[in-house]
Length: 164
Picture 1 (tube, rainbow, N blue to C red):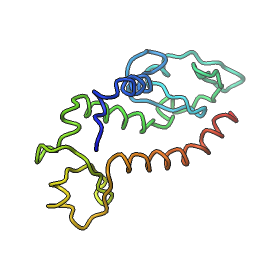
Picture 2 (cartoon, rainbow, N blue to C red):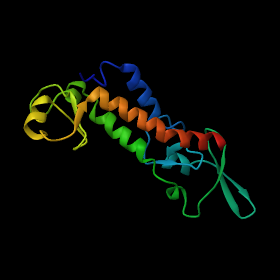
Picture 3 (cartoon, helix red, strand yellow):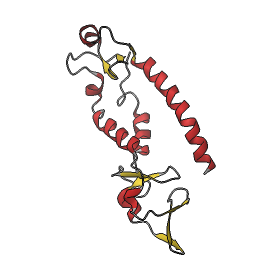
Picture 4 (tube, rainbow, N blue to C red):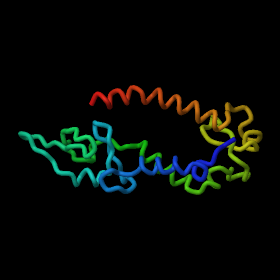
């Protein structure tokens, strides 16, 4: 059966809030950018950081790890957007109401299944009516599988991050 993401796990919500907080301004990220050291900051926070100059090149020091990065000629906007942080923030906003996050908007029943075919959570009525021949699994089982896949994907990134 599905667990309520917000009300039953306040510790998880606090951890998510912390991950979505810029370490410079201590607010939710606004247009987050990722530095080569893989730390992320709001674009406006990066724009306010002091630059070091060596010869004709400017360098930016990461506020978290102090890794020096060559400042792009195009400015801070040239650093890649931290899409994952934007997506997590969007998800957090959508799940701020636990009842809304655990009930089907069409049938009012508990969201217990994850339709692999449609990539969405569904209730039993949705499964019978609209997803009859689709691949689906219990939300908890699907979550466990996705966490394992995510850990496998993150392993090489963590190794590179440690090497920096």
